[in-house]
Image (cartoon, rainbow, N blue to C red; front, side, top):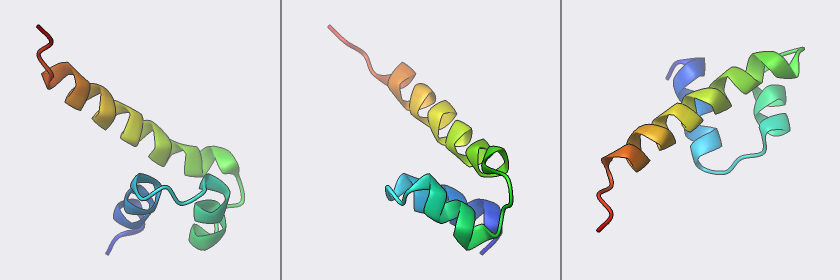
Length: 53
């Protein structure tokens, strides 16, 4: 499993961002935060598929 996939999976499973940073060995939180933006984009895409009446 790639680090990108692992990080995305962990964040989607509600693992703390700081814990993901430590697990991946990132020295900067900004590097780890990239993965949280991916989740936000995915969530926005899913919400846009909803049809409210």
